[in-house]
Length: 385
Ligand SMILES: *Cc1c(COP(=O)(O)O)cnc(C)c1O
Image (cartoon, rainbow, N blue to C red; front, side):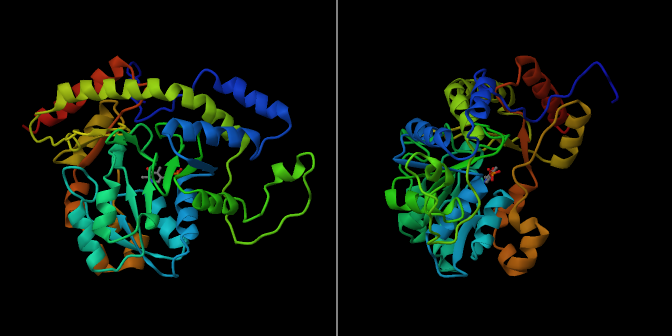
C-alpha cells in the first residue's frame, strides 16, 4: 500500500507476557476450561494487585457495569448519571439494566466531570445512581463527585476500564470502591483479549455479582462437579451469562506479572511525548495537573484544531491514531432515546469532542515508532502555525 518501505505505526498492539502460552496449554490439558479454579485464582491475584477486598471476574467491563446496576436494585427507569464523553458500552449498560442515562458534562482540564458539572446534572434529574469514569487513566475524585451528586457511595459505580495503574492519594483505583468495573479488552492496559472484573469493598455486594454473573445459578458448574458436589442448584435471581473462562483467567494471571513493567514503559513514553510536544502552537494537553495522583497512562490524549485533517495527514505519514470518545450525545441511538433537550446539556463536551485526538501509546511502541509519531505530529501542527 503506497510506500512499501515504511510500515505504519499502529494505534495500539496488545502485549502478552512470555508465560501466557504455557498457562493456556495447561488449562486446555486440565479438562476444565470454563469458570473454575483459574478464575478463582485470578480473582485473588487481581484483588491482591489492587489491594481490594473482593474481586469477581466477569465476561467484560460492559457486563460488569450492568451487573452492578442490577445488583443495586434501583426502581425501573431510574436516572443514572454518566459522562457523555465515555464508551457506548457504559451507556448501553444503563439502558439494558432498564434505567435512564443522564448526561454529565466534563471539565476541559481533566476530561472528566467536576463536582460542579455533576451537581448541575443532579439538580435537573434526581439521580438514583452514578457511573464515573477514569478517562484515559486519570483517576477521578470519586468521593467528591459522590458528594456532589448527593448519593451514597453504595450508588456509585466506577467505570475503571482505563483504571489499572491509576491511584489517588496513594490508593489504587478500585482498592476501596464499592463497585469498580475493570476491562481486560484487547486494547486496555491489562489485556486478556476479552474479560472484566468487579472490585468491591463489600462482601454482600460482591456475592450478589458472583450469583448473577452466571444466570443466577446458586452454584456454578465447577463446584457442582467437584467431589461431593451435587447436580442440584436453584435460581433465586435472574442473572446474566457473563462469566469469565479459566482460559481467560490463566492469561490474566500471567499478564498481571508483566503489568508493572508495562506501566513503567507507558510512563517513559508519556515523558518523551510531553518533552517533545508541550508548548507546541495550538496544542492543548489535558490532565497535566498530577499533584496527589498516579495517572495510568492508558491514553495520550491531546486537543488540536483542525483535528480531522490532522488525523488524515498522520495516516498518510503512516501513523494511526484514534479518538476517545465520540460523545454519547452525538450518536444516533442515544439522540433518539434521550431526546434533543437532554443531548444539549453538555456544551464543554461538544466543544472538546471536536478537538480530541489520541496518539499511539502502548508498551510495545518502540523508540523509533515514538519518534515517527512525534515528527509527523509536530509537522502537522507547525504547518498550521
Ligand atoms: C473499553 C471500555 C469499556 C468496555 O469494556 P469491555 O470490557 O469491552 O466491555 C467500558 N468503558 C470504557 C471507558 C472503556 O474504554
